[in-house]
Image 1: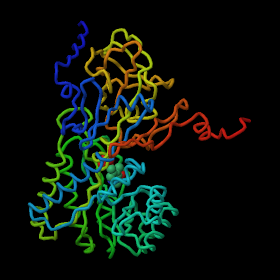
Image 2: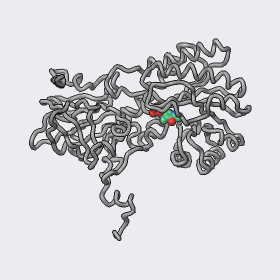
Image 3: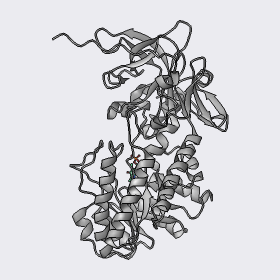
Image 4: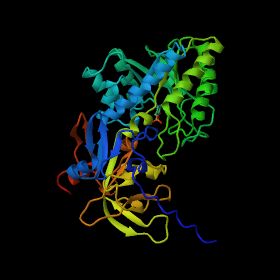
Length: 467
Ligand SMILES: *Cc1c(COP(=O)(O)O)cnc(C)c1O
C-alpha cells in the first residue's frame, strides 16, 4: 500500500492568535498574543512584553519567568475552592501546599508565598531552603510545611529543629520504618497511603513504592497526633474521572483511619492536575474543584462525619505556564521522506533543558517567537548535543514553523516549561543552561546569568590549573 502523504499544513488566514493557539484560557495561553509584526507577546495588566525583542537583547537560549502568571493562577485556584466550599456549605478549610520539587527557583517560591501558599518539601535540601526563609523571617509564622519523601537522619533532624523553633511542620510517614522515630514527634504528623486504584497517568501503578499500603495503614496503632491522610496518584493525570475516583476511594480510607485515629481531620489529595500540553480539550480547575467539594460534602454527610479540611498540592498546574524557553534556529537540514520537510537545529538542547521531551516523550506547545505571519514549513527540531535522541518531533508528527530568511534570526518558543524541567536540567556536552530572566511589573531582571565555560567546567572539577 502506498504510504499516506502527510496532510498539508494549514495556513493561517488572519486570526493569528487562534492559529498559534494563543490567548485561550483552555490552553493556559490567555496571557500570550501576536503583535502586528508577527512577534510573540506576553501581557501583564496593561504592560506588554515582546519576546522576540527579549531574545535579541538577552540572547538565546533564554528562559523567561512570569511571576504574575503564577500569582494569577494560584489566586484563581484558591478562589475556586473557597467559593465552592461556600456554595455547597462545606465546613472544612482549604489549604494550598506548593510541592517545591516542581520548581525550586526563588522567584517561583516567593511568588507563591505572596499569594498565600503553604509548602510541601521532598528532601532535606528542599527543607534547607525553608529553613533559610524562616531564619530570615520571610514567612508568616502561620505557614505549614509538609515533609514527604524518605526521611534520612539529616532530614528528620532538620524537621525536629524547625518544629522546636516554632514552625508548623508536619512529617508525612512514608514507610513503616519511619513510624518508630516519628511516634516520638511532638507536632502533627501525616501518613501517605498508596491507594489501590488505577490512574490515567505516567506512573508505575503496578509497582508503586510510595507510602503505606492500605492494609499496613489500617493496621497502625492509634497515634494521637495523626492529622493528615495524604495520597498522590501521579503527575499529569489524563482524565477528570481519575482525579474524582481518587477522591472517592481516598475518602473510604479516610473514614476507616479516622475511627482508629480520631485526631485525623485533613485529607491531602496530592498533585497530578495536568496541563493541556497537546492542545486538546482538557478538564478545568473550576469544574474539578466544584466536583471535589460536592463529592466530599455528600460522602461526609452520608457517613455522618465532619467535613475534612482539604489540602491540594497541584504543582505542575500552577507553575508550568509561568515559564517559557526560547531558542534560536542555527541551521536547517533537509529530511528525505518524513512527516516533516526539514530539521531545524536549535542553539540549546531538549535533552538538557526540557528533559521530559526525551525522558517521557512529553509533547509541548512549540511556536515561533517571531515571523508568525510568514510562510510556514513542517519541521522537526534538533538540539545541539551530539545525541540523536536530542530532538523534538511532536511525537513523530511535525512542528509548523516559519521558513528561514537570510539575515534574520528565527526564534522558537517552547511554552509551559515551568514545571520540573529546571530541576531535571543537565549539562550533556557541557552546553550551558539557558539564561534566565524575570518579567515582572513591566521590568526585566536577569535572574541567572548565562553559564560560562569556566563555571560549567568547575562542576566537573576543572578548577584553576588544568592538571
Ligand atoms: C510531585 C508531587 C506533587 C506535585 O505533582 P504535580 O503533578 O506537579 O501536581 C504533589 N505532591 C507530592 C507528594 C508529589 O510527590
